[in-house]
Length: 152
Image 1 (cartoon, rainbow, N blue to C red):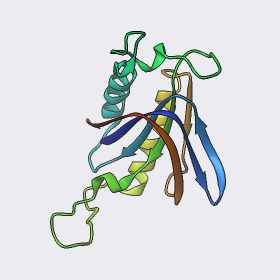
Image 2: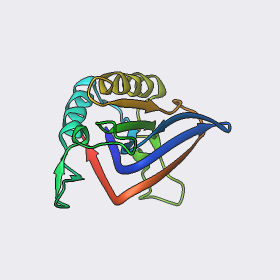
Image 3: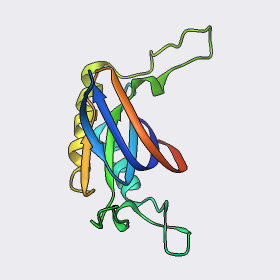
């Protein structure tokens, strides 16, 4: 399982011109599922993501986790937008056309994506998602920028 985590001030996702998810300050998570990935990996990664201290405290140090930040409207706790992204498993070592043979089959990928979203809901103030398998337009205002690559 691979995740690109971007700390954002806001992010949104649209499908066919219709917005299907929007968050304020928090994380945009691009989630790639590989063959052999499991629910246990999801659980470990979500625990790590919830505890990552990558938000600035009053002294400008990255000491706060996502649940210690406040939104522009004064509400407390960060928000998460999860986007399925099988292209994280692209293998570009041979030729000029990426191979995706290491990405999970769509059935497993969708199952683990939906499981990830459901398991995330109790951990964060707000969890939004894209549409699995859809062609999506994702917009964001990156904060920092601060981007991490996680594998589990």
